[in-house]
Structures are given as C-alpha cells and as structure tokens.
Amino acid sequence: MRTLTRIAAKLYPRSWRDRYGEEFDALLDDSEPDGHVAWNVLIGAVAMQINHWHRAVIAATFVVTALLAMSWWAGQHPYVSPGTHRVFHMDSTPGALLAFLVILATCITGIMAFARMPGAARVCLAIVASYFGALASVSLVTPQKIVSIGDSYCWDLWCVGIQKVNMAPQGQDVLYTAEVSVSVDSVSLPPKPEASAANSFFYAFDERGRRYPVTAIPGKSSLTFVAPANARELYLSGDITAPPWVRLYFGSDLNPFHRRTLLRIA
Amino acid sequence: VTDPTLLVLASVSNGDKHGYAMMEDIVRFAGLRLGPGTLYGAITRLEEQGWIKPVGAKDRRQPYTLTAAGRKHLETQLGMLDRVVKTASKRLRHA
Image (tube, rainbow over all chains, first blue to last red; front, side, top):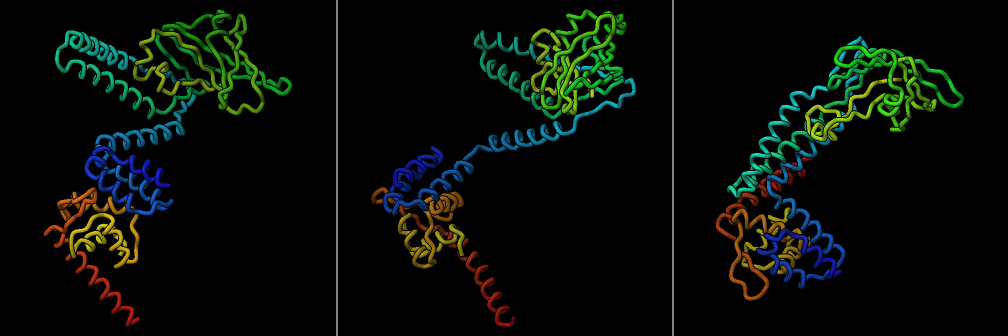
C-alpha cells in the first residue's frame, strides 16, 4: 500500500512537487499507509492537477466539449430538403477562395521560416492550426443536408436529382429503381448513361451504413439496386473525384469533417 | 465543522505545526482525520491566500505558522460560526 501511495504522490503537478514534495513525502512516511490514505492522495493529486491546469487548457477543454455537444446535436438534426424541385449546391466556392489564400499565406511564411526569419515558423504553424481548427469546427456543427426526391444537388458543373423511385418485392429483398436526372453545366444528359461509369460512380446505402452496388439501366436514366426489406432509409451517393486540396475547402463534401450531402431514395 | 482550511487554521492558531502534527491535532480537537491529500490541498490554498506561511524547518517536516491575515480570517469565520451556533441553539430551544 505504501508503494501505491508513493505512486499516487508522484501524480501531483511537478511545480507542486518542487514546492511541497519533500514535506509531503515526510508526512506520508509518518502516516500509516492504508487504502484510504492511498485513495486520498490519488484524489488530491487529481484535484491539484486540475487546479494547476493553465487557463488555456481549461478554455480549450470547454470549447472542445461544447463543439462535440453541438456536433452531436447537428448530427441529430439533418436538413431535409422540401422536395419541391429545388436545386441545392455544394457551396464550396468561398471555401476554395479562402483555402487558396491560406495556402498562399502558408507558403509565404513557410519560405520565410526556411530563410530563418524570426517568428515566421510560429506564424506559419498558427495559420495552419487556425485553419484546420476552424475547418473542423464549422464542418462538425453544420447539419447534414438530405436532398429529397424531386430536388437536385449540384457540385462543380454536375447536377444529380432523383425524380421518382419504384419499389418491387424480390423475395426477401426489395428491388429499387430510381429515375435519376443528370445534367452537366445545366445541359441535361441524354438518357444514355455510360453504364460502366454510373455503376462505378454511384452507390446506395442504408441507415446502418450497409452499402449496395447500383446498376444503370441501359437506354434509361435509371439506376437499380437490391436492398433488404428491413432497410428503413436509403440514400444515393457517389464517389466524387477531385484534386486532393478540395478536401481542405469549407463546405466541400470531400472535407473529412463535413457531413456529406445525400440523395434520399426511400 | 469539516472545512479542512478552517481546521488547519484552527490547528496552527496555538503554535507552529508541521503536517503530521496538524493531522494528529485535528483528530484530537475535531475528531476528524484528514487524509494527506486533503491536508496538503488545504495547506496549499491557505499559503496561496497568505493565511499561513512556512517557518524554519529542522528536517524534512515543514512547520507552518498563522499570519496576521490568517488570524483575521479565522476570527471572521469563527464569528460567523458562533452566530450560526447561537441562532440554531436558540431556535432549537423554542421549537
């Protein structure tokens, strides 16, 4: 028990131990070591650690906790579009401009740091840390967008919308056929989707994250897939390809902190 | 009275004491054994407030003494406790 008490005593903050460590150890030598004493020393060490935390650490803990709570709330309250033929956009244009300015500033300060200019490295790190902090924070508290049947979602020059969904029982499963409208730069594509391209781009998944491959119907703007009858919510998404830096944009669906926009199938 | 800071102030009010001596003294006059963590948490707070201060140590045991500000604080706290005790006793008698 004495060893446990000694270990607990070592958990006090270093500055505290520098000041009180010797006399505290003397007190522990004088005391009868038992479970109560060891526990009391451990609780004292934790309380003293909290007391010694720098205000910035306490503020950061508060901010992170608040952010996680807001993120959880945002995750519970997605925005569901009204399904009234509205068009939604992946609004990452301002994010792209901001990312460009940040990358430019990072490069300039990085070069200055490489040239050993005093303080440049710190500024460079501060820019990067602030940007990633803001990117994660804004993305985590932004609710997910769910595009209902009838509405469309656009990114870059592409727009995709689900117009209608038919369901047909197929044994234990359900065969879904979704009429999909695809346009590029506001020009509707003829109903001859490149089947292989559509098959590799789109995929469907349910509320449990189970993923289902989709198949384009040749000659029609329709996609089909089979999902179990117990799948309550089904969504369509796609493997958007873009340069890696697009992942750093605010509002980008490729941003790893951002909740990706989904097209509701059922 | 279970406030460790008040117990420590009361303990050093009649002379300088180191941690273990305070612990034993508090057991004698209050019937309460403070754990080492609780005792040194109180000592740390009291020293930060300037209510006790360390005095010359002969060995690893560090004695503490009550400062003038500490004495004033203790008197204020005891005055408040005295009022509470008198009021509660009076009310109990008339209940």
